[in-house]
Amino acid sequence: MGPRTLPATPSLVETLVLAQRRAVRGLAARLADDGCTLDQWRVLRALDDDEGHVMGELADSLQIAQPTLTRVVDGLVDSAWVYRRPSLEDRRRVAVHLSRQGRVRLGRLDAIVRAHEDALRASPDWADVQSLISGLSRTP
Image 1 (cartoon, rainbow, N blue to C red):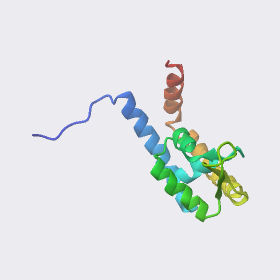
Image 2 (cartoon, rainbow, N blue to C red; image 1 turned 90 degrees about the vertical axis):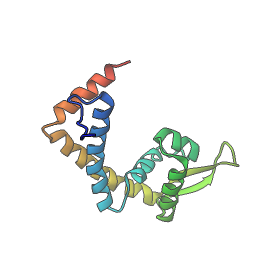
Image 3 (tube, rainbow, N blue to C red; image 1 turned 135 degrees about the vertical axis):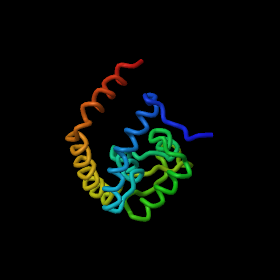
Image 4 (cartoon, helix red, strand yellow; image 1 turned 180 degrees about the horizontal axis):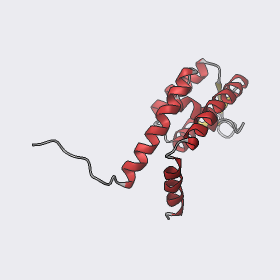
């Protein structure tokens, strides 16, 4: 068997995956320089509405596997960026809330993300990305 060649025209799914990975790779490196992971930042952002969220709700909305989310939240609790409290709706369930320290931390992380997104928008490939996004938003 000889070496396989890649198709000349990538599929839509492959194009989306490659674009996502390129964008995330740079952001993940910038967040790591500040001692944070991409999933930690995403959880902090989800908790920024001051409502507190149960783990199942967070896992569904962020599309993070429950065991992974538990590890991420454990790390955030250890850093005092979030805290757990019994849910107001169902005392048997635990809700996760953003702490004051977490809100300060999120502000700094959001600035890193904004700078990264500004750099992406300034790149020569941004017009292609915008076109792809626009096409996807029109797709039913």
